[in-house]
Length: 373
View 1: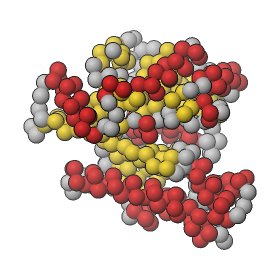
View 2: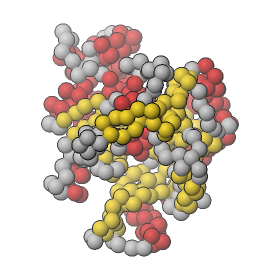
View 3: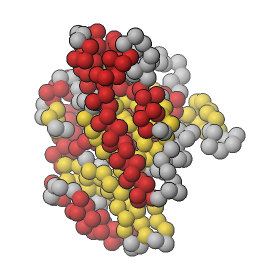
View 4: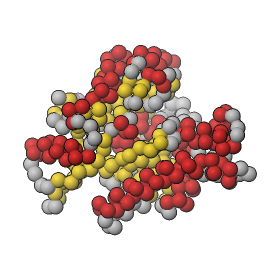
């Protein structure tokens, strides 16, 4: 994440790894971009493309008191957890100090902006002026970055992303304590979008739902990230809703969520009644984004599918619930389909989707890094 003044610095390929700092967990993935396996690409008949292979991955938890509203306030707690992760909980070995990190999307401002045709050197000021219109925070308190999405005779479309400086600075302080060299900081939605760009069906406008523990990031992907938002409700909320709705213990609710969820069972109607308030918040935000895309881009490129990932995406029956509510094709995205873990021990079925952001980070190109002013 940088300011709108960004200077590209090209390096010979140097490895980096992805570090996803969640509300109370760390997840690491390092990939080699020297492919060892070939995957068929259905978007281009008969075409095949290489899969990067996994060098290392792992996860661990930390005290959620370490982070307040996105800011790392007790970096020593996360540093201790990171040490344990590097020393004892990794599958494989991290071979680099260069790290790509994510900022929580709920603390960022992400929006596509339409601009008239102009030279590159005028674009920065134009983005700042537009950003001031929709960001309810003084720009001096933010790092503002932007990416050109498209350019034609009618004008430009750029994706502007702004993040509070105190959040980014706290991440940089944490990296200094751990002894890491941060080379990329971006929103979790951007990482997930990079991951989804490798999907065989990423060529159609798509809603992406990334379930966290207490919130869900919902984004529009159309050739790239278009916009994103965050709503309350995630995997931990599903468990709590089942616990309260069915009058069971938290442990029992966790078992019910992972074993039965919304799929057909003797208690399906009870479970759905318990989960409906949480899920309807997510449905409402999805419908809002679908309307936004339709109003902005017309009927020529309608959103036709919904992709779910993150820890909460594993709940049985969830895709069918969203399909019925939205009248859109819904499927869960397995981030490990885009990489090859070779002879490494594969992650458990329950843990596969939670690595989506970390894999998206690890897929960042090793040869291009941006320097912040």
